[in-house]
Image (tube, rainbow, N blue to C red; front, side, top):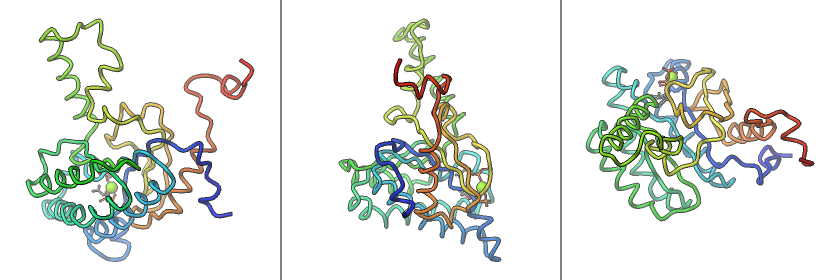
Length: 250
Ligand code: IPE
Ligand code: IPE
Ligand code: MG
């Protein structure tokens, strides 16, 4: 049976987050420049986006550029920004065809103006699509996001809009840039690295983590299905015992 057919469509994660890693090593392996890897990573983005939408995943967050990535060599950052602009422009039609809505999280004001313009246009032109929401994390870091949330809540307290005793998990959730999306149940990282790299620290609190050695430019639909199947074979206990989860009697 094909991998895809083994997936239980009634037990899909609503939200899958992916750290797309390994572009540079993939390129280097072939004696090419790192940017060659980034360019080839675009096809993988198309594949997982399509695979996710076809299966019925409602939200997908892709870590495309971290706050820390600004520290890379200038020409690599510039190449990534150019690639972002040209890809978004090219993909709007496909997003609409596949009924995918585009959103972003992160400090997008840091991006070059051209990228900001392309993004706002793509967000606007795809806003009525309802099959899947594709969230690009751009100039994103979780510590930045949490810091912003803390400032926001502190300001509400100082302004008398919220009492300190009333601050709860929901107040934090609503102050994060992910406020409109459910927390990811599955986080995939490619390229063999087993770390979170400042990605969705709050939101991944109870996510299942899936690490694969495949470099991002090699990541195809079948790898995505593999991750979903792996997720479906796990027991999510949320602090309880296995018996509590499986016993239907009480
Ligand atoms: C992921 O691939 C893409 C970005 C972080 C923008 P890398 O560029 O990190 O590739 P490696 O990890 O150096 O191989
Ligand atoms: C994480 O990958 C960020 C993105 C995939 C955009 P990095 O390659 O930047 O992470 P580290 O430096 O290996 O932790
Ligand atoms: Mg990397």
